[in-house]
Length: 295
Image (cartoon, rainbow, N blue to C red; front, top):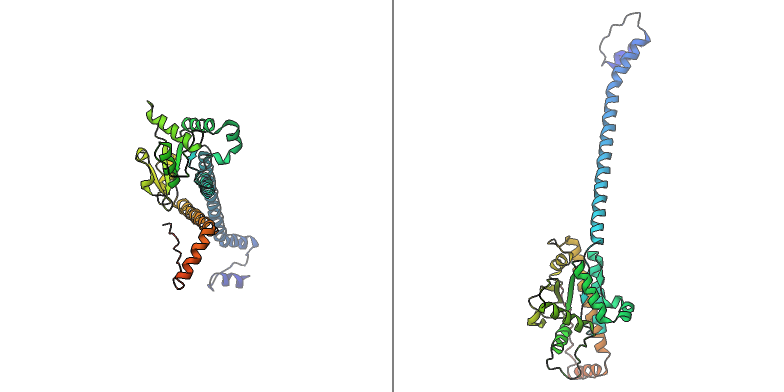
C-alpha cells in the first residue's frame, strides 16, 4: 500500500503511520478523482448548451419558413394578358405563367388554365371578373407583349391591316383587355396596377405603342428581378438564387420556342425547295446557325 501511494505522488517520500486505515485511502482517492468529475461535468454542460442552441436555431428557422410560406400563400394574384400569336407562343405563355406561380408562390390567372370556366362564362365576363378580383386584392395585371401584340393592337385601334390578318374581336381576351385598359384610362380613378413585360429575343421595345409607354416596362430576362419585386408588391426583388434560376428557365423557354419554330419552318415544302436551291448554287457555303444568347 505504501509503495502504491509513493508512485501516485511522483516518487516522493511519504511517512505513514502504522495505524493507516482504509478510510484515509478512500479520502485520498476521492480527492484525486474530483478533477476528473469536474471535467466530465464541464463537458456535459457544454454539450447541453450546444444542443439547446441548435434547438433554438432550428425553431427560429422553422418559424421564419412558416411565416414566409404564409405570406407567399396570401400573396397578391396576377392576371396574365397576352395575344394568341401562335400555338408555340401559347406554350411559352403557359410556361412563363407556371414560372411565376412557382417562383412567387402567388395565384396566376390565365384563361388557358381555366378553359371550362371561360367556356361557361364567356371570355369577356371572365376577364372583367378576374380584373375585379385583382383590383380588390391589390394584385397586378401583367401584359405580356410580343410582336403579334403590336399588330393586334394596331388592328384594334382601326389601323390599316395587312392581307390575311384580322382585328381582335371584342370577345377576344386581348381585345377585352385593351377595352378594359382604355376604359380605366378614361375614368376618373386611374389605377397603376398594369405592367408590361416582353421577351427581348422575340420583341423590341419600339413594338410597344406610344399610348402604352407610360406603363412600367420590363425586358425579359434582363429585368426579371425588378419585375418580381413589382409583382410581389414590395421593393425587395427576392433572393439572387431565385433570379438566376428564373433567368435560366426563361432562356430555356426562348430557345425551345425558337427550335420549335425552326423545326416547323423546315417542314414546310417551300422551305425545302429553297434549301435545295441554295445547296445547288453554293455547295461550299454551309449556313451557320447562330444560337441566341440570353444574357
